[in-house]
Length: 108
Length: 122
Image (cartoon, rainbow over the protein chains, first blue to last red):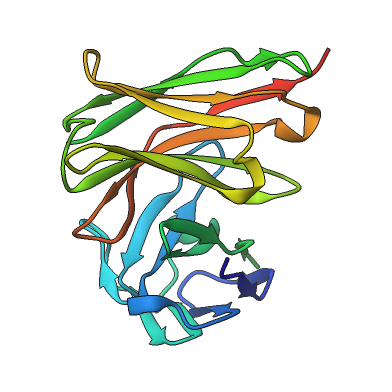
């Protein structure tokens, strides 16, 4: 299985700043089938980005996904208070899904 | 709008069988561009995909290697739902369990149930 490693583990920022979250795969992700999810306490993960760079329905344009091969990035351009949460990257390969361990985005 | 709702016991004894159900509204368990998945989240293992069921002329299943010997996911077309059966549970199986839809057009899991906390303890 492809292993996804996210960095940093925790990111401390202030509202209005930009956030850059990284996700590295142990091997090339086929067809760049990488997604990003946001999860808040007590809630299910919410799909933000799929196919590396396509925003899901209703996701504001301050969220941007990029990357290819083994290196993928989620950028949040201007943090809003509601953006502080845990973020997971995920890939779909050979009929299986694997997730990164998550990045905690916390208010500084 | 697709909605998923899990149900099942919140407490299971070690060595027993965990059985959860996911009721689907707004889509069909037999849809030919979707797959129905179970995922869990625990402090020790993070988010872990467990398996899926889907219909493409016939029913198919895929399971994670970590649970393959103990897991069964079944569709129930009469109730438009699917189930997770996990045998011989241990405390390591304590987690929040989610059901989720995979849609071919997005190539990932786009709708999730709210999750159900399951504890394995005597």
